[in-house]
Image 1: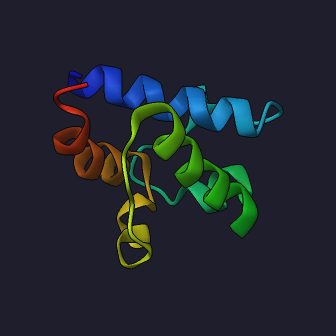
Image 2: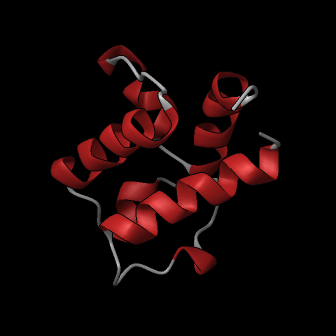
Image 3: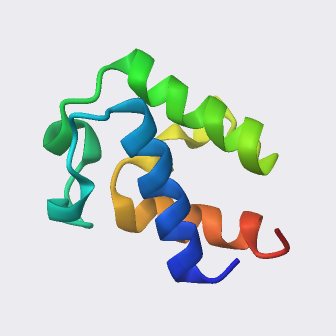
Length: 83
């Protein structure tokens, strides 16, 4: 996947989990939890969807890497490159 495809995949997962959330206005460098009012269950749902849809494992120790949209893309791009 390209960087843009990784971004689209993340945004689509978030939109599915938070249909009332609007990712089009998300600042890529600010924490997603703060911008979209994600609770811990929503965050875990995102991690589970990454595993289910793309077979990407995110260890709990790496959860801070998924704080912002930019950091999500940077973390996931190498893991999703061959998808």
